[in-house]
Amino acid sequence: MNERKITATILILSALGSLMASSKESSAQDVDRSASFRFVWVGAPAAFDPPFGKNQFQTTAYSFPIYDSLVRLDSKGNIVPDLATSWEFSANGLTLTMHLRQGVKFTDGSDMNAAAIVRSLTRSKTDPGSLVKRDLGSFDSFEAKDSSTVVLHLNTPDANVLFTLATSAGMIVSAKALDDGVDLSTKPIGTGPYKLVSSGPQGAIYERNEDYFDKSQNQFAKVNLGPIVDVTARLNALRTGQADAGFFQADQWAEIQALVATGKFKLHSVLEPNSLPVWLNTKIKPLDNPKVRMALNLAIDREAINKGIQSGQCQPASQPLPPGVVGHDDRLVPYKQDLAKAKQLLQEAGVGPFTINTLVSVQEPLASVGVAVKAQLQAIGVTLNIVPTGSSAIRPEFRAGAYGAMIQTLSVPAPDPASIIDAVYMSGDNPGGVTTEFAKAIKDARIEKIGSAGQEAAYKAISRMAYDDPQHVFICWSTILIVHRKNVVGIEKTAYINAVPIPDIRTYGLLKSKP
Image (cartoon, rainbow, N blue to C red; front, side, top):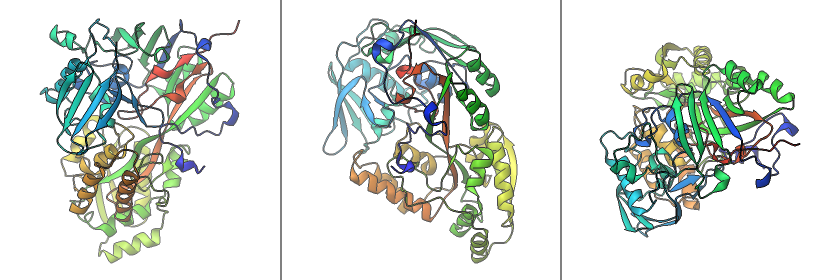
């Protein structure tokens, strides 16, 4: 199989060969259900109330063990049942009827039923303080047809709302807790496989929800999710036994290889739906000229950036949708650096040397990417004036419209084509907007049934339009690197959603120690 065909959410890509996780699954009796598990990553826990988490990247990881949604994503990015066991759209696409799992209770003892689902989703959509109401914008209202059936009314046909329901926007909270005035930000009540015990700057501790309906999703007695910001310290925590698994970066590649070579650890790699682009503001001249934008794309040596900065862990890209996501087109190969052609296009556009005032994230590897892009563009007479900017300020600054470009990771809520295309072209990160033709193509694609030939064709057409007339400069798709103790299983089964990468430890387990 062509490597680019491997699905974006479960790509296992490593030069470590036999040291990678075996495809053979361990039986349930091999897993130690009395074990505790610690996962280390980048952020501390914040509020646990899904609609109000100001940092969805951090909040969602800590909410995953607590809350279920109507549907979930599997490791291949497919929609699978969760609180809903089946569903169907109406013929006109304006209603989505979902049939609920029976006998499920929230951890406060109250029933999970249609009324509770309606209460939770309505709150997420309509509460003035909700930070996910925009994600639920395709929905008009929610109706409890009976205790086990929910009807979701849409304002426009949109098959991709199923992906939205699988993100934090679709997490279901207890209606009883809302009635009782419980502060869910500190005392979360869901139906999930784990219950929160405590939380603070050092992380969050959970215990198993013994009444959970799927025992394969809560295989630990206790779980500790905790932050270690420094990447070296994070690796040392794994090496010294203070952690069982964690996220790591491409610039640690040599250290990771050495750790795995000991035989005590394994590596799992996942190609993200996130990309690393140079975002362009086409309202600023001469970036409004398609020939200029193509010239910038042809000036970039993507493979040099991949190998020199990302240790070969950032797959070169020139289209918005990554391998494994509907609409990715293998025929649209990444542009090769062609300085002569780039200079010719600038000459045809009547453009001489010019400067692009560019916001660049101070975080690595983005800061180093900015330096590399600056050097490569200089070869065609374009000066990248780098303005180092913190992660919390960079997007608001760029969206204000005064800067010509921004170098910042694209973060998407789910590996579905609609959310990626919307984030790239229809959000504030594209202040120049799109043509009427392109906007229509995006709108029409959302109507196509998920997994259908029509959906594939519609998003491939969008990819072709974006490739022929690039709005931005896509550089590469990032890779999640998870290093874990060799007795950790189930990591290859998990899905990664909500501003990937965020771990969902539900599928993880620890093998019993041999006597």
